[in-house]
Image (cartoon, rainbow, N blue to C red):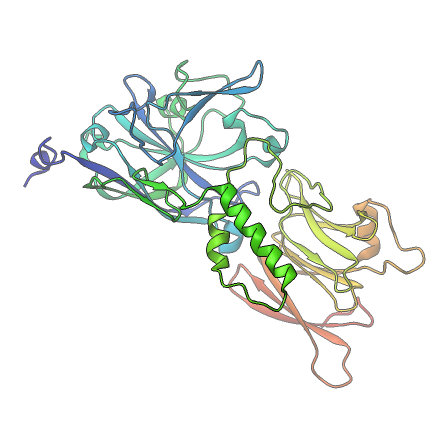
Length: 447
């Protein structure tokens, strides 16, 4: 059967498309790129809008999909009919856990629309590789594009000049021409993503990487219900009880456990916990858990690692600003306030450890350094001001340079008799694990 015969309407009738987003190539290092994800738009180039559904009453991507318009004047959302295929996205890929700048997703998205319409010559897929803009989210900026840091984009025309594209496809990534603050739009239409302006720009600048995807045609699935988490448009999530009924039952169970601590309650508690869920509204306070003791503010790019001291008096955490500099902050749990900014790294801090006596802190960072800090909080004259530059000169005991990023550290006390030193192991991006011996007294001598 030829390609043309296969795409005859009678051969792909009642068939839909499955988009499998696999992975990217190695991406350029960027301090803002921490947990990137892929956003996908299906566009009709004739109208410069999202592709209209053939049946507006059927879900296209997820069962409970909806659409709304944000009004800047009164800052409210108005729900509208979702008669088009809405944009969708993969889950994020945490590059800190992977230890490399290659994002892996391997997610399949079922597009509940006739395959013959997806393979129309005027339909294109626009892929955006983006990350969360922490600063914009904190400022409660409701402009959708401002909430994302744009990294690169790609496109696919399923029915292009060279024919119809099925199977494994490698897409070239391109740099953005227009940023989030640009007023240039390809179209004044409401349902038109800004990336369409980059697609329409005649001079594309290649980004030195790619995106791997797969496009398939499958039989349409019959709609059904289930009690597990599903995102495809044919499956509706349901429960055998209402949320209020589950809350009542869980309350009764807890009352029985308090009254009869030694008596076992025969109930599948894990099953109850799985069903006991709810959707939090926009800007609504979290209801579960029910109490919050402290809330600590960090710099623009947030906190990457935090550790309690062994005596439970302090919490050490990192705070990374928009330039990539990470501060090491000490929070006093008894007083409920920041006690000290002990120092900083020029890059993201990946790991942090306390010494057993809580007077030494060891940190590792993407600035290729392992740093050892003194924390003698009960000594006379110990710095207590939040001036990390001044404290760094007083608290920094030593810095060990590495040839690349230092992702993880671990230490153990020297098992040799009459030894007061520590073995510190470091895991580096260059593929080597190094072990260092650090004498406890004096702190500044290293071997």
